[in-house]
Length: 615
Image (tube, rainbow, N blue to C red; front, top):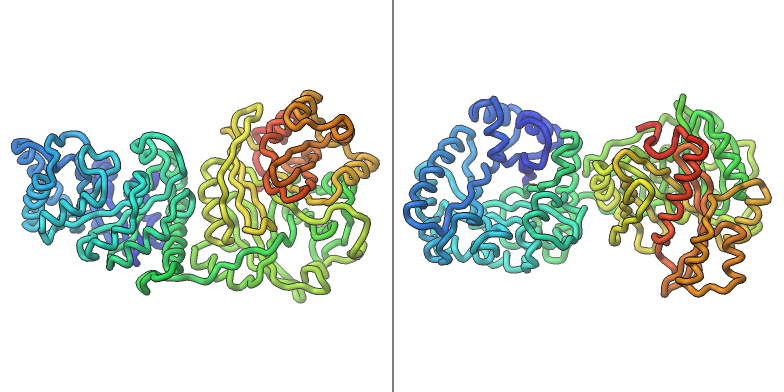
């Protein structure tokens, strides 16, 4: 299907929006009337620019408060419509969106509304245009797409059809399955938006919290499949009102928006019974685990010292680059000093093990994800890479050698891997990535569309500088877990890498013996643990001695501790007991407060408020 976007989704002037949409690869746009009103370009000039850019002007919108009115007001509404139709002809578009009346309707009658829409259809036909009637979720009388279709059906005019908007349908909890009862030729337009699950009035929800497909809680794939099975042959168009998107970079948002549409059509095409009119892209290849985590800095010495104290092993220096490898079990930390002048340690990249790296590369290309190329020399493994929205590089590997990733052989003069060594760190449990609010929704979509990760419910935790919002992205089996964190405005908490082990007490004890001082935990926290979980004195004494944090669920327990930050990074060591599958969110405020005290005590220049050095 063709792709389209309403100009209201983007920041900037109308011209800026058209250029951004064309560069992103959209087929067409909906012209939001206020964007034209404030433009100093005439409708003819906008039409000419769209033609040069190869953009089709799919629809002009919105026309409000038309139907269900008394006769005198109807005549004035028809006068307004006549002026809009003239503007549309100048623009070169032939479809106008008519929203159900929210303000001036006084007659609750399908027949009256149908008669008035028929009058509008006659006027539209005189101008060679059509109208698409949409049921707003807060319409005074018509707030259900099924009723809007009944009215259009009764109007029985070739220039009058319906517009189906996923927000207005799903926000009201209406079943989209009945879309298939509407003849495809009478569905004049389809608008799409996702949204988070919120409890608030639908108008505020709509105006401020819509999201691009794949970022919210709705099954838009099923919605699109219903539309396609009805026989709809027009564009799939995005109409997303969102305070963040309308302030963000225009071109980046347009690229993000198109990616969401490509992903959505592919998702709908994979549903049973979906028609061939829906386009599929390369199959997703869900990661089977972590390949490595990369830390970058001008000098990674502090990080090496920290890893040694945690019990990790130096595996060698890369044979052609200033890059060093440390590992323990299946946990591999790559320390990169290349092109890192003046940079403090920070999380720079994550590698994933995938069954087919080429398939993920092809899927990413179809989703217009930009590559993250790295120079390799003869004999070095080339891996597909991409730049994630938060600025972190993501690389994919499907090649092993001797039980380890093939690229490990490029590191020399270190200690070899010895299977079955003394119990300690065994792998990477999860990775926490901090980024700004403007990158968050795009990062969620990247993880779902490119990597095929799932997104359970979001959480939030209170810190000294405000709430931290967290969205975990994960594989179904939990082998890959990414926690995407949004800090309060002006504050950037450190990223952190959580290392998994089977005996966190032993790891903590040996780390203390090697000189590690973990993030200190206040005594009040252990008093609270006693009250919450009725822990006995011996368990509490062990937790206090090693500055461990604790959580319990019906499935099991989590024992964990944190290292102090180094630059914009810290490490966590976790032990999951039983089938514990959460992240001890109640402990996050303890960590944030402790980190803040440590930062203030030493006056860190890389404390809260400083971002990742390479962004």
